[in-house]
Image (cartoon, rainbow, N blue to C red):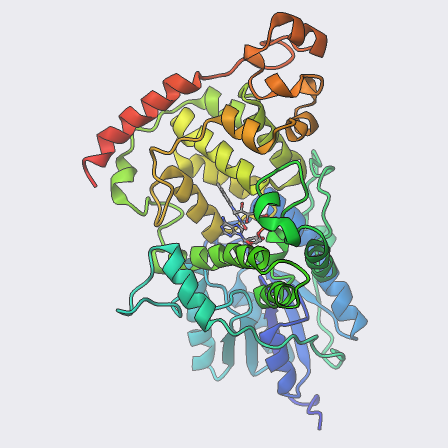
Length: 481
Ligand code: FAD
């Protein structure tokens, strides 16, 4: 029996831009009432404003969601402004008595949502939150003494035992019946960059269909050799699911279940499926850490690192952001990031180590740059990983483990194909010298058309000196821990 004549349910979309496997949508549908799907573009202080690359993604993802809802007879309502004020307006316009949403787990957003829920509840409007973005809600995976895990491996073991991915659902077929409401036009939001439009190299298909396609392509291709392939940036060995997961265009449960099933069916070696599942686990671990340590994006998890003697090196930072450090693997990564909005994980670690340990620049500056330029910029994963590289995080790589950008390049981009792609001025440099062109004989450089300091920079810092300097700086803080 349909009760569409009754007060509708407002379905508040946020980082769950999908119709499949969407618990809030399924529960709203289960009420039998009409559903008013809404997205509110709130740039207020409760959440860190999205960076440029994220806004590019949001623009396309909302268009895709809007089209999918339209195909099912509904209409996505777009509003801009303070979340609570816009929700109240919508409640008034529709007479809705309930608001359903998938919860945001970033601490500030979560507090804001609780405040909204309490306020609305006091006025008789039911607010219900669900978990649509993580396998286990943060706070739900605890150690034997009821505290948060600070080390990944035991966290993962408990998560593995606890996670019970729900059965796949496709969402309601009919989303018609909602009252007619005004909606903003997405074109008026200006999310797509202009003046200049720097997104020409963004080769992505945002939206639910693009997410499912990325998963299927990965299972058919990269998954069977994932543990090795994921470390070689010239190869398509990783899933590139990160922005889809961040925006909730696909649920982690669906990704998890599909990968486990591929392993169990023998379509891919079980060990490869497990390795991938562990990476999904790192996403969960990051959210878990941010939940228990809300200052993670601003403060060192190990407080002694907050006194680290960072340098203010504007020229060095500028060269790093532009991919002009003179270290080819670092420059290739930074240019891949700028051009495509994404960077390979191995190279993220190398460029982050270079910023922190070779240039002695505060990890927070790097975190902020990634926040603005990554299509998958995620408060928890970005902060957790920057602190992992810095050595200041929970279960982090020790600070004294300093990546050598030359040997990392030689090991993980042996033939230099990744560098050739992103640093075309080195394209003709033989593999033997491509990761350290300053060591190449003059004749080799001449033949490759490379003039150091002219067509390509000389290294902006000597790695051996920088390494000693970083270790000396570490000594200063390590006695305080
Ligand atoms: P795959 O190798 O295919 O992994 C599958 C999924 O697992 C990813 O989509 C992601 O959701 C998750 N995952 C993999 N590695 C990690 C990890 N180390 N930490 C957390 N989750 C992981 N990832 C983000 O999603 N957002 C960020 O803002 C972000 N910032 C980072 C900053 C630094 C300095 C570093 C070193 C890593 C960062 N990562 C971040 C983690 C990782 O680099 C990306 O998740 C990964 O490169 C995305 O590509 P993929 O989807 O092909 O990964």
